[in-house]
Amino acid sequence: MGGAASDVGLAGAGGVLGYEVSGDKVGGAAIGAGAGYVASKIAQASYKHETTEAEQAGYDQAMVQAVKQQYWITQNRQKTMQPADARDPRLVPVLIPESRINGVIVKSHVEYLRIEP
Image 1: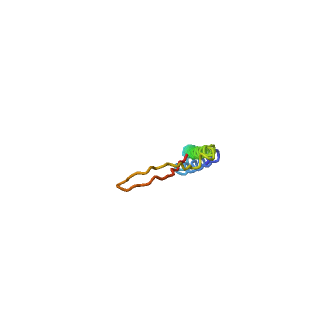
Image 2: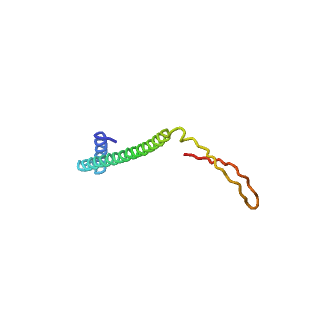
Image 3: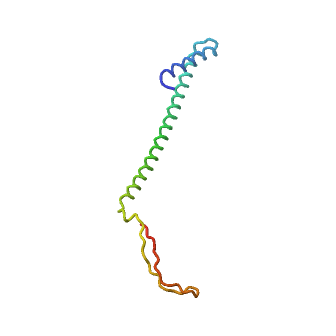
């Protein structure tokens, strides 16, 4: 719904309707044309408002997507900034001494602990 074409079309239709309803009087045609013009302006304002809201919703969605993309870009950069050996897990040997657990003697041995960055 846009502009002058809508104004002329609805004002003309309102004028014809007003002329017919008023019993072929010019005053009725004028009132009908005015009512048609007002209806056209109301319809245009409603259309413009809905269009603006839809554009804003699209803009908001695009901004949310951009923030998500920036977040993941930052996360991936931080992963690649670490040295290669820091990203790999390391095994650290730990000597477990001989001990007695519930009457059972456990001989000394080496266990390896996995250390991850």
